[in-house]
Length: 170
Image: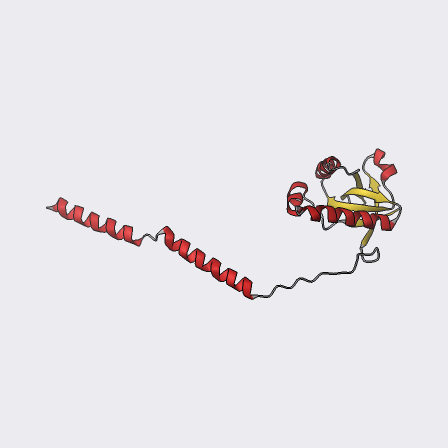
């Protein structure tokens, strides 16, 4: 008799335990309802796209001035007054790694170091500021046109829309 009561209580507990479990479909229904509300909200909000029709001129591009020296002697001849910098890194090994990857992309990369010890990864260097600005824009447009700036950021660790111009001080 005691076994029968024990089995009956155990069966009742199992039924109660099974009925308390939420079903996966319940979660799915809540998720779908939330997703639908989100889509309705985004559809009801007007989206405005503002395009800046002004071309970027050399006066609008910020130029940083600093003293830099080439890391390697064979880069000295290539380092001009205005340079397009794609990255500024504190670890030489990281700068060299990025340099190798960009050389594989076809850029004549120069590593330079400033007085604070930061390594500047330079993809182009010119005596004329306008040439440097034009090259900067060319690189930005090239990678943005590919539509894979996130891939490049993950691969190279560089946001290709944040290139800057370095004016070398002697």
